[in-house]
Length: 121
Image (cartoon, rainbow, N blue to C red):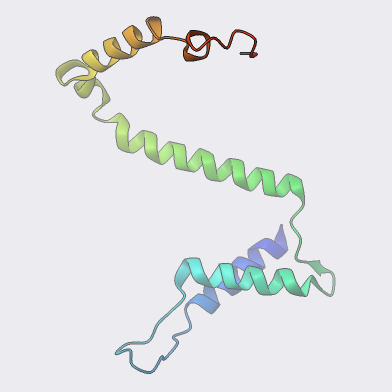
């Protein structure tokens, strides 16, 4: 995982370099998103430098993806969880839950109503 962190660090450095474009009043920067993306493309094309292989093993890739989705869901839960009980009890929350239950219990299987009994569910 050391090459990943080195690549991110180099990408942050690349993203902080100002680029002067004629016609723009201020310098442009790639920022914290563009710098690591460009650096990942460059290092992925190089492949390896000495004993540093710019390849992420599948297990490390999966671990970082899981960490990313967990952090995303934690932030979404913290942002939406504060008003959940108030919305449910005082707003239209109970009517939406009732509508969902009613719709689920009374939904029509459109495949069967169209005569498609032979299709697997």
